[in-house]
Length: 102
Image 1 (cartoon, rainbow, N blue to C red):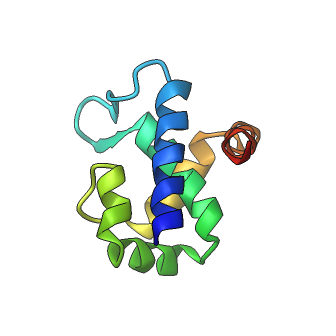
Image 2: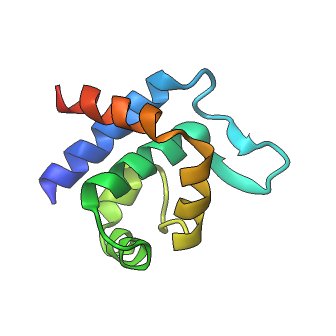
């Protein structure tokens, strides 16, 4: 658990530094309450955990310490991860993953 929490914090920090306005929701009208940096951090964590999306949602909901890092009480719906995958190029995410490994 400690390793995942440390990774979640690292991913949050990288994502926050990566975007221009990290705390602004992606859809200011309230349709999507996740900030771009939160989406990126959770996508990076998804790649690290490497579970099917439905299992990932359950897994995250069982680890409140990990969700606390992202300021969430509940995991995003598994379908959100699929939508977010289309929002961010995999090259960008892999570059961040490589930086976190250094």
